[in-house]
Image 1 (cartoon, protein in one colour):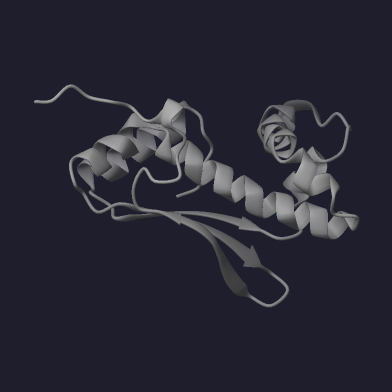
Image 2 (image 1 turned 60 degrees about the vertical axis):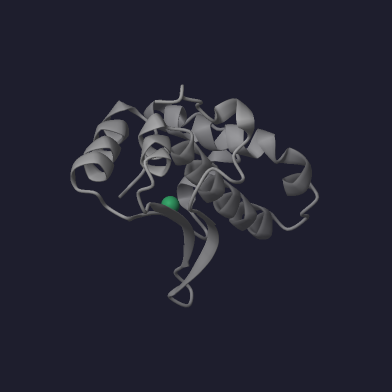
Length: 144
Ligand SMILES: [Zn+2]
């Protein structure tokens, strides 16, 4: 599934989890990503600014770590990994995923980065439950 955290993504997510009962969701980024590269500039890209802004938010969250990396390419590739991790967290923040976990369904979120230079996929993060999610994002439910 390609993830953009907008309404359309949520309806695809809902159908996949609730109806198709899929067990694995993969968010896969790639090193050297032009979109992530663009997000690290201050250039105006018109219509895609909206998507770049989400990546800029990830940059802002991890600014200290990123700006300690002197080489631009390494900084870019670290942002690719951090962005994948944030998108996995964004999935875990949805009630769709949290309901599945609450109901004891097997649902694993995988964050991967693809390296086009060697064709290898690097696992960045994995979530099988609410561990690792800050409590402000965890929904609580009254006992049935
Ligand atoms: Zn890309």
